[in-house]
Length: 156
Image (cartoon, rainbow, N blue to C red; front, side):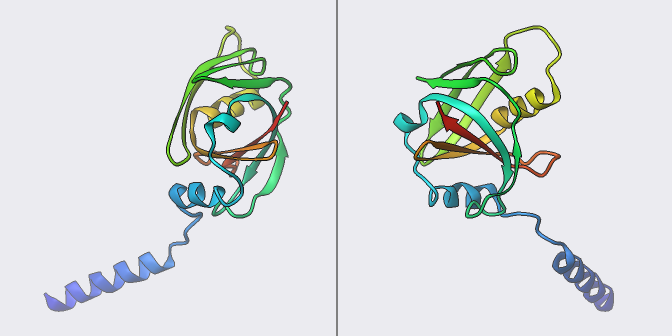
C-alpha cells in the first residue's frame, strides 16, 4: 500500500512540474500595469479611440500588437459608457481600488456585429483592471482565443 501511495505522489509531482504556466495571474498583471501608469478615475474618464489588441505575460511588457481596426470611440463618463464603435455602444462601468475595472457594454443596434466589433465587446465585457499613462489607456481583460489580453486606447 505504501508503495502505491509513493507511486501516486511521484506521478503527481512529475505531472505538476511538467505543466507550463502560460501567463502570470491577473492579479500580478494588474499590479504590474500600475508600474506603466496610474489608476486614476479622473484620468480614466473621457473619450478614447481604439488602437490595439495586445498581449502581456506579466503586465511589465506588452507585445504582439494587432490593430483594433475599429473606427469610432468610447466615452467613459460617471459610470456610463457611450460611443460610436460596435454600431453604437451603451453600457456602464465600475472602478474599485486599486485599479479593478468592470465593464458592461452592448451594441445599441440590432444587427450582426463584425468580427472585430465582437472582439472589442468581449474585451470590454471581460475587463479586469486598467492603467492610464499620458494619453494611453491600457485595459487588461480575460485572455481571448487570439492570445490577447490588453486593449490599448488613445485619448481623443
